[in-house]
Length: 148
Image (cartoon, rainbow, N blue to C red; front, side, top):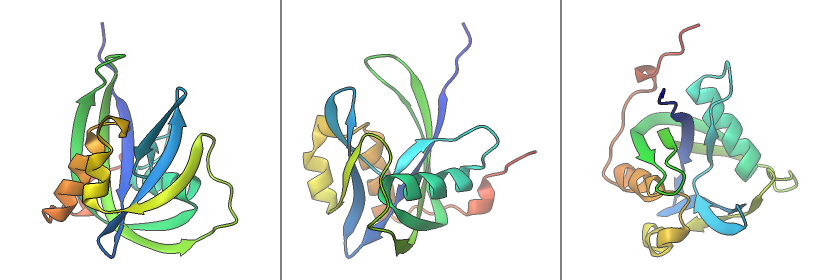
């Protein structure tokens, strides 16, 4: 059997000690996540995180750094996910824009508010990304190479 992890990205966006969190319905349950999603065929990691933030949060996102690279295996379906998390700035908000299917709304939450969500987080990577951001972990964007 060939191991085929999902390639995903996430945006860690902080303003005034609060983080942008997406409330979404997944398989009939309410879950919380950063603006995040799968990298599409032919798309760079940076293009993917910019697109996902616009689609899920109706915000333009400019990544500044990579915060971390994470590997997680879902305990239920045993699928593996590789997540590249970016920290950066929101440069515009489009409140009139419809959000992606399944997205209920966005919230600005403190780290502690996110931690209290526990099992309602889409994955444990959500809190790990925030904690790495708070710890000051920053890796240059040119760490990532899109080889065509």
